[in-house]
Amino acid sequence: MFDNIDVMKGQLEQNKDKNYKPSIQGVTGDRKGERLLALSLPALVSGTNATGRKFKETTEIISISSKLACFRLKTPVSIGNSVKLILNIPATTFLLQPLRLEVSGIISRIEINGDKKFSQVVTIELDRRFQLGPLNPSTGN
Image (cartoon, rainbow, N blue to C red; front, side, top):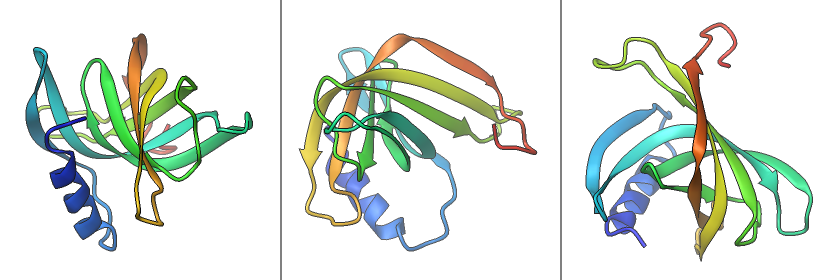
């Protein structure tokens, strides 16, 4: 779906055994007037799995725009299921305080991956509503 997804997958594979440090790699392309950012940010995904049970899983965001988010997921899910993402955005040169972003959306695409550690790449269409607030450094929430 994304032009640079193979490049991003390769980067994640190279870094999977290293100590994880969140980073924002920059704009990877434009999709119908949207900027698509390649990210390496931890995320907590929650929702309903393919069998209808609730789940929570920690993962990494592969890319995100104002309309779509893409991430790897071990838990089997189904297209049409609703999921919620919670991202802790670190402070940067331009962002003085870390932030917590909560978004939700509907699963629109699932790519099965041969990698046993992550069995699928999930794309969700984001809802317009989101919550953005300061990250409490002592609790991480």
